[in-house]
Length: 412
Image 1 (cartoon, rainbow, N blue to C red):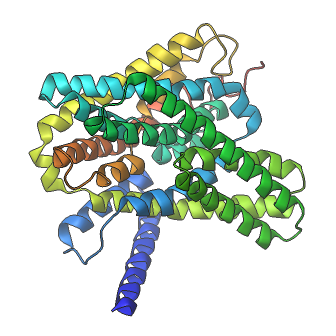
Image 2: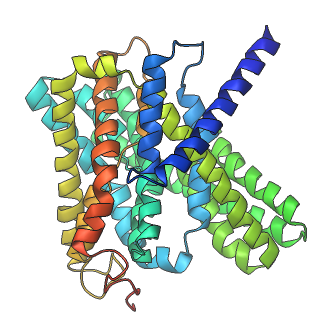
Image 3: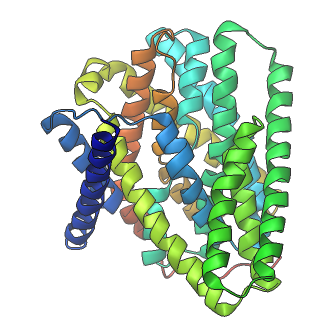
């Protein structure tokens, strides 16, 4: 029986990869984002093909797919760029997430009658952005590197924050910890996770520097990506934040202290392929995990959830980031983050696999579990289909593409 299950899983994996390759070939000829097409394919497959004993579990997304995705993105983040805009990223990834959670909870409570503590659970699930669907668009249009780094950096760090807030929101339904306790817990987890990631990245970088074999060095990077995540998770810290920090250290410090040009090229090429593969699987699985029948029943609540997320994004991007940047250099600019960039950051705030994984992880006996999942899934589909398919048009319309005058990083 175990042999049959393993063979069935392998067949399913090969089928998914084949479908991803086919979709990639097709969307090259039509004006549809690759990840949106993958979600559509997943939805159609879940609707038309009878279930075959396979289910999308949160562990599959969080332990198998997410570490590789965040590591690949983080090793490409240049520390010089990241340092200039880290204040803005930190603002979006911590207070920005908390503000979004509160706004979503309040709006859902006022409009749908959802208990405020359950509203906080929904808010934590939809607070983290997942712009994987639009990063390729930034590259194609030649958008400023600082803008792409800010959008991508926000998603890498706020995934970790949102997962921490989600755990606190779940405990709040039963234990009701104080606000101070929650803020202290978030601070401890973020700091501890960054320390774990920094140490892991430093050790991996030193090991890589002592070896002159790109295959071994790539193996070390793979161990660092997944090992850091699992270590932090085992210690009840944020695996996402730890893995992101480890990737930034390896991608910058590791390249400087002894990584050969051949290894650096292999590292970028191999991890780019891994990210392509994982991205394809993530968005196919997102489609497979969502039931269209469920969404139809909860349409009014979903619509209010979408409104809440958009309102929260407006407050965070224009109010928090835009307002604070008027008095600082959070955006890496002499004065303020350009208004065109704020427009793009608002509309590029997509939700994706992490939100779906959190919704799937809700305990079976959790109050109003199906309603919470339906609202989350509906928000994810809206951001992917509507925002994901129109962000390219927005980038061109506001002038944040190839001819953006802010494309060259401003001096600090």
